[in-house]
Image 1 (cartoon, rainbow, N blue to C red):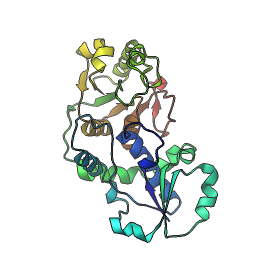
Image 2: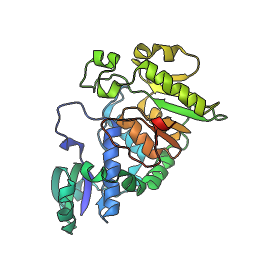
Image 3: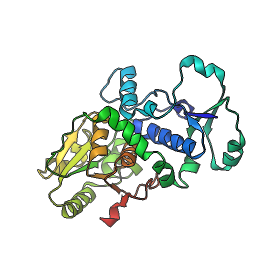
Image 4: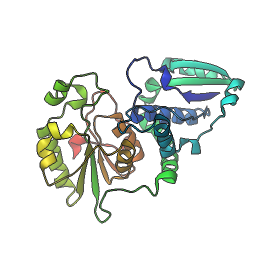
Length: 287
């Protein structure tokens, strides 16, 4: 039996999702397959949040090369799919799991959007099944990608998610910190930054965000204490998150994806929508 990820199964009229949402699901499906002696088939996916307006096919290819999942998983040629019975389901639910695993038919090819009810029962267990291999595959294609970090110092990377065109809330809610993704006010971030500076003395602090950061967090932006990187392309931003000595996750699936790849110190905010993925992540209240 073979399993693939298919974002087209998502029931929404909104723009194609970003790389964080898509690849968290892909990694969870790979881990699920390994845990149950199934085979995951990878193919290039369409990735949203193309803020740099790169040609769409080139954008998708850049991400596919970045993660290099094809280096650790089976791929098929287009005509190979004709050899399978194809079944598309939105979700493999935990209540269906036992019955699903009884099916040993090797000619079936299942497309799933996600397995969240299975994953969230023990996310640390599943991601540990794949974390070494996915990091090795990533390093094979990114070892020469440059970093803006000072090589002579330890570096903290902080992801601060701001308002963007994928938000279902309005701009006022972002400014007033009244919605899920944007609950942290500037004063709250200043407090967090001070705690980080006290704990990690002499570390360089790098903040990665977008243009709206200057509007809502102007005092932080204008401070000379931090290196602010606004509008860096998403691929290189994620590359910095993965390689930071300390990574403070933002309220974003892009952050959570980086936290799975980063093997150093990862600090987890009290996020209202996603569980803590790895046991080694440190709660923000513990620093």
